[in-house]
Amino acid sequence: MNKRSRNKARTEYFDLMIEGRQIAVSATPYLINGLETRFRVSYSGSPVYIFGLDSETHQVKLIDSSMMPPVQIRDAIAARLEKMENRRAA
Image (cartoon, rainbow, N blue to C red; front, side):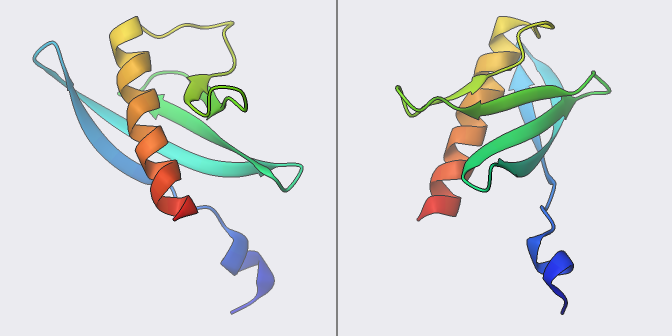
């Protein structure tokens, strides 16, 4: 196995139920400056949103606020990414 394939991020796919609707989410982690994990996130064909760990609150939050998904979807995705990040850190 070469170095490139070992460092390749794995996209995670999961479903969320928001107000009775199933939302299909894909999230791909990547590193900024080799230290900080961020996620490229898309749901049900949406544009890509960038989420990252807030260093002050230690919570995953939407970073690029030029586009805003609905609050319920944003918060549910952030909570799921936070769980993923906690598993990766353990």
